[in-house]
Image (cartoon, rainbow, N blue to C red; front, side, top):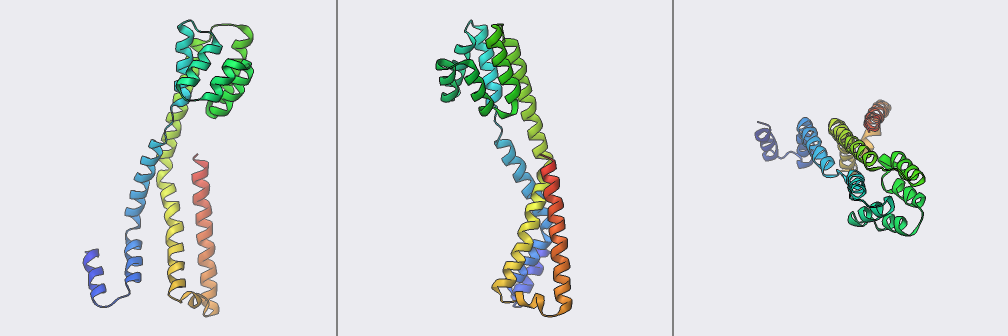
Length: 212
């Protein structure tokens, strides 16, 4: 029905830009849904299991009889982390631990502490690295769930920015932007509308930021 009505309006000579703006306004719920699905899909593609793979690889090397230094170097080489592997081979393990903290920020404290303490004590650490791997996987799963849960809010925030900006751009290109300030009443309504828009945008951005 919407397509039919828009077609009739176009046939009667209505401004195509106004018809497009009307169509976008009507389709906002559907656009939010599509944008939310796209945000979820993109969020899942950004999943990075490298931290868990590193810890599991080190644990496996340790169980195979390698020293902690060799285990970190071999796993870093396998995962294409040459700087970490080089520190493990040629520098102190404290340097390797500091580099691991930079490479894996989500488990930085646990990983650096484990490498440093095991290097000092010489104890077996395979089980500890397995535990850190499980922690990294859990954190990654939580991150994905948060991204999925906040996807509609992020999509709505994007639309709330695009639609008003598109409307203002349309008024500017059509030469009608000055009409918004044609009288004191219009100025007042424009200021109120802009204020409400900015407040709503700030709240939406705050909700998205809090959900991270």
